[in-house]
Image: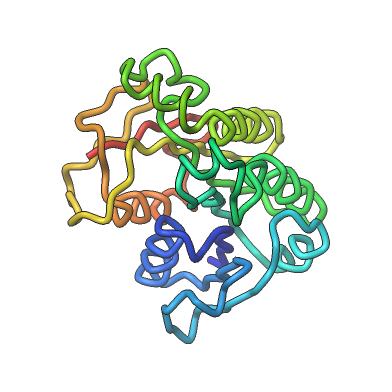
Length: 218
């Protein structure tokens, strides 16, 4: 398959690109800093662009079979919350996804896999109270953006899957120990990005989790 990954240079995006290539897919890595990806393959195409630009997204969507959205804000949450400074606009998830959905409809791409966060939307009530407090105090803007993003995806009319990982780390893979739950159940509060990337690559085809929100934990 031909799969495009938006937000390809973030930690989760990089892991997803690697897993897709490992699975034999042809991958387009879309990012403002695509040249910094650091992954090399004959089946990898680097495409510099901004998800907030409808023109950039339209150009990228041609010829794709599936889409993975791994957009997000990587800046220090304290800096974003207190100083309102971020290298990435805090509406990147919702507005970028809006552009992606519109482009998918224009060119006829159906499969949309979106990375959100545990504690957003369907799992909001299941979030432990310390994390609810952190979301409110430090991540309010980013979580509100994720809420808007999820609503756009559910209303998209596309073949969507929303993936909600718990706290992301750069730790070692849990391998077969990953829990993918459509009821919001989690085992641990963290999961390596490599395991998230592996799961995202596994659901770009097939119908097991179609139209479902999947909580992902180690």
